[in-house]
Image (cartoon, one colour):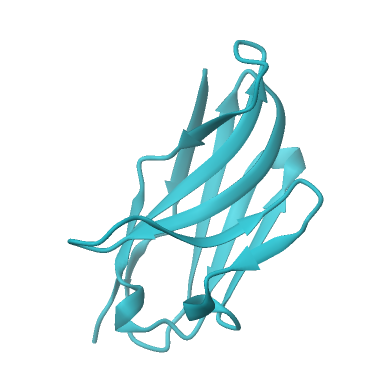
Length: 121
């Protein structure tokens, strides 16, 4: 079994910054792609940023130049540094990881429970 736990959300003023952290735990063998998604009220869950095991990244157009995704494989952790936040960034942010584990060798996608980010003055 694999668990993902997010932290770092909260209330921030426009143009402010936050860093989200997600740590995976359990019977992990290898973590492939890790990513952040977000879902605003009444909208679908959308990809924000992703990073492969090799370090390749991709971003949603709306966050390019403002958000940075990174990972620390020694800690099974992925980060999302968010700068110049806008009210439109308000959403629940979910961590995703594609994981091979001792109980499930074929890679499987796991989700965290989410962390709320609210951008408001």
